[in-house]
Image: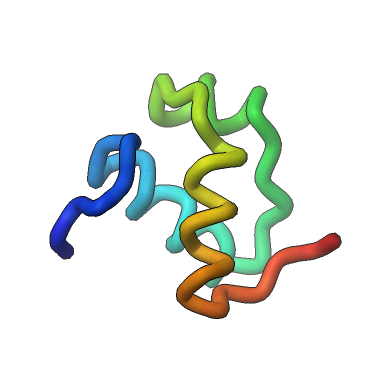
Amino acid sequence: MANHFHSSNTQINWAVKALLDGRTLTHKTEFREVNGWRLAAIVCELRAFQVLTEA
């Protein structure tokens, strides 16, 4: 996966897998599980690829 994001591939892959698993994502879980802090940026980018999220 080419990284056009400001987050690492690990963080992006984690977010995609978590969404596909039906998990609700929070900044706290992202920080705890992949040491990330830009969940909003990842979600914004994934919305551009039409990954569905809760509003």
